[in-house]
Image (cartoon, rainbow, N blue to C red):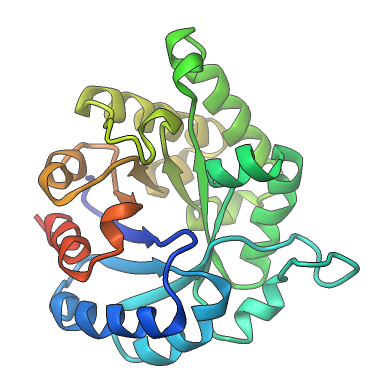
Length: 254
């Protein structure tokens, strides 16, 4: 973590929690993070719980993010949600390009090249997810994969707004598997992502926040969050319980 970049811990609930379950969670979380000065905190919740969570977190430290959005402002896209539908609810941001969206639902870099600037234009903070599979890492293709994702997905973002994007480096082989990148692997990949952004604009490279994601838990968070080029975490399973998520937020304060 560099001085000047505010750490950002976001919990990705994926397809978990009804509204009632979300309300129970947030009532347990908010007292635990109320004094987490110097850390940005967000929950990334299913569409059905967005309105309720925005209402329940008003005036608190917690921001509310959606898990996806369509790039078009409106249209014949059954089952999709636009940026305007999110901003109407006072949602703060949106996760884009999560590996599950890419792998299970065919999300492409071409679509993300439209989604990231569309989110920024609407006033949403985009968390752009990038990362390699186990086969790609074993084949020495990690940097090629990250280069393709970062350079393509950010291609249409105005240079002066690049630093507003958050990038989450998530090695796909570490998501939900219990495997965690070693601190050396995480630092190396996050530093490489930062160098890619710096290659577009040096100031943005220094300012952009890069999260690590992939089986982040209270017992490994402090070591990962202390890395020079890791500015926070995108947390999966450990974000589903208020105590474990709050412990990761606390680790980011160190």
